[in-house]
Amino acid sequence: MIRIHHEGFRILLQTLVILGLINFLVIWLSDMEWLENSVLFLSLVVYILVLQFFRNPKRFPPQGDDIVIAPADGKIVAIEEIEEPEYFKKKMLQISIFMSPLNVHVNRYPVPGTVKYSQYHAGAYLVAWHPKSSTLNERTAVVVENPSGVEVMHKQIAGAVARRIINYAKVGSKAIQGADCGFIRFGSRVDIVLPLDANILVKVGDKARGGEQILAELK
Image (cartoon, rainbow, N blue to C red; front, side, top):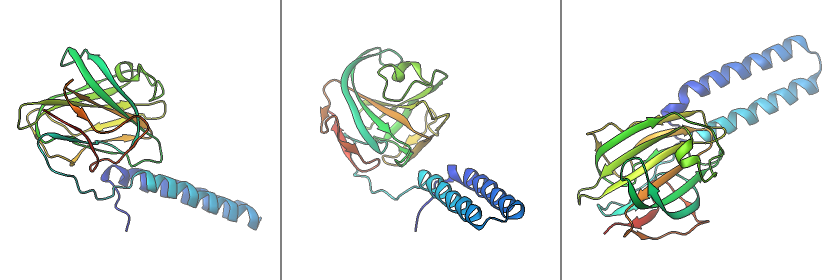
């Protein structure tokens, strides 16, 4: 049984109605069976693709105050030292995960604790793997302080196709490790910003599994 994220309910209904109308018009206006069958087949393919985009598989997050789990499915495209300009304003480590349209697009809290910062930024729509997309694209930035007092940032970054970032994090709210913290449509990137002394457990090119895979250990 496929679990569907609630962010997809309205779009799936709209898609079903539009495809149904298209098929109705084709059947009504055409007497060519091959055309009717072709449109029906293409409609099924389109609906299945939209359906799989909004799937929300159950994940079983490992629990630990000092571990950082992947906030999203996708490919790890960068692990680098950066000068973080928005909140920390100092050198930090950043892990970047690129989410293709075929990945699960649910975003999850990487650490437990309290939300200390949550901010939306309007911006451009560079391709998500562009080095400057992290600071120039439409994005959100969320900082969670874990029970040990260590702060971790995750950023939802729109890509060339994504036009809708949904962020559930509110300042002062409780962050449950592995629980939903947002959603992005339709292809994008998530960055995790960590202290320099974090022990990174993954490498560039690895496939991240949101809500389950441990990316790093905090000290």
